[in-house]
Length: 68
Image (cartoon, rainbow, N blue to C red; front, side):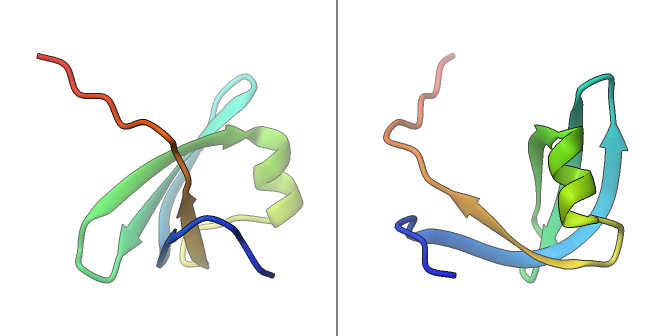
């Protein structure tokens, strides 16, 4: 699969928590940093995501905002 996104972060799924419609998927990167992705429950099911799976977190954003 080819992607236009430049930020593809390989890691392992360490948690999948489903809510009413949205799931939170926690991914641990090789550096030990964890990131959290919010995706639909349907996407979790279609990808058959489970703890221990090797995945790639793909980040594509035109803006990163920080407020204080």
